[in-house]
Length: 251
Image (cartoon, rainbow, N blue to C red; front, side, top):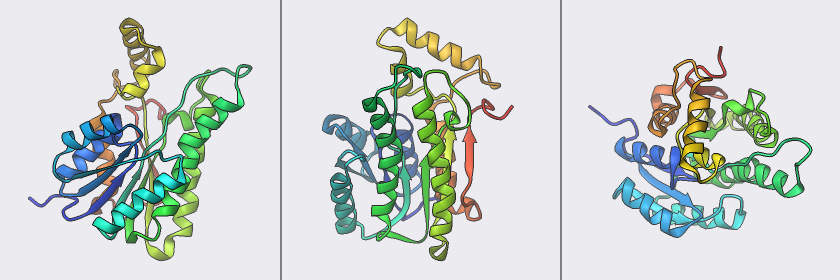
């Protein structure tokens, strides 16, 4: 049976843990050569080892356009093109209205909006006509969440970027879509509860109680959805938001 991404060149930002790492592994298993990024070299080296010989690690911070330039120079030199771009790097923290700061605002919007904008824009010369671009959204962009307003607003922005860029890029047939996970058991999620293991499990249990399927997701479950959007199986899907949330934001 043929692999879904055989011979494709893929780029995954934020690929050292969680959804990004799971997706890099699945892209490689489906036949892609994968360039992945991360801010910390040790974690990046471990991720490359986990993905295997199809992986190339490029250290960098997606909020820094100079780091993105270096990434794409490496991709151009070693592969010459991009067939699939997963703009996944992002993150955030929790603060309620009344405690928000300029630093918190900048962190949320730089990591989620600025990073996504320039990750995609700087990739344009390398993206082939008909390429697939996937952005990481969140159920938080659709739902209200206490003490998470700036993160949620930044993910709502991601949704509209996909709509608008689908129109900007229609002459090149580049498909831009959003995958919006619900709660996923990743380091970024459990860290919101702090270092205490009992508190982390309490957070996961509380989130699971809000999900119709009764559990949080495994990162590979989201990676399979991203792979669908990356592949020709989704050839008529463009400008859309695909929720992988166990029904959390749907009912």
